[in-house]
Length: 254
Image 1 (cartoon, helix red, strand yellow):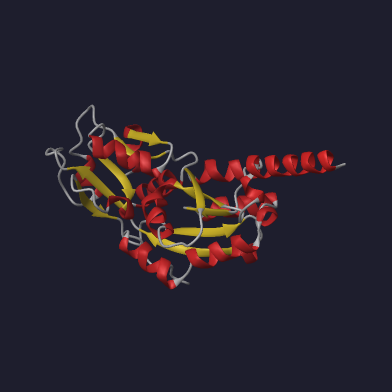
Image 2 (cartoon, helix red, strand yellow):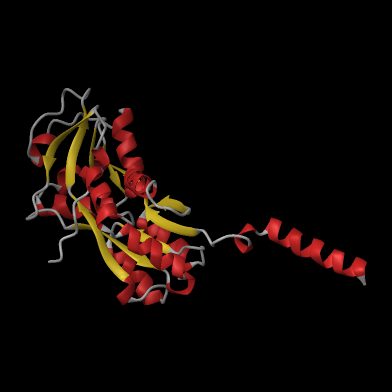
């Protein structure tokens, strides 16, 4: 009987070691749009508990969540993917909050001396035959969807649509211009903080560009008390100040 009791303790101890989540507070997992990576990393530095983050385009992340990925919180760069997950039953409206905003800009690599101008049409007319414009894939990446809408509103979409280099997320689009693989890109302004080799040529006015808002939501079936705590922190005034330091704007209610 004594040996059986010892064996039982050994089995229990082995299970705890192989499943650390049983021995400590469940670690939260954030699935987020790639364009928030630098800002979110800085925000989480001041969070007292551990949180893992997976980054991709908002559409890719939303599909992963719907397929059962172990997400507790979703940060989306486009409201459409929030609405899609509502339709799928993964999140509910009362658990969705605006998080921050940014602007859409045309930026070039500073070594692309031939690209000049401050208005979209003037800028794109200086492109050479082998020049491409980096942005998100308009088919499913929010950056690309925002870019296409802004270019159509500015009546220059037909001028540039065959020049688009569609990237899988906003971060990849920015890296393409930073590396010089493309001389120019349509990017999020917040992604350009600290990138000294890029120059903003044009910021799309609110009359032209769709409003670029990030939303945060908790995943209903995976929500715990720790999820609520992390959600509150990410929306706190302390976190908002860090978001602003990383180039984002406070969310506007209207």
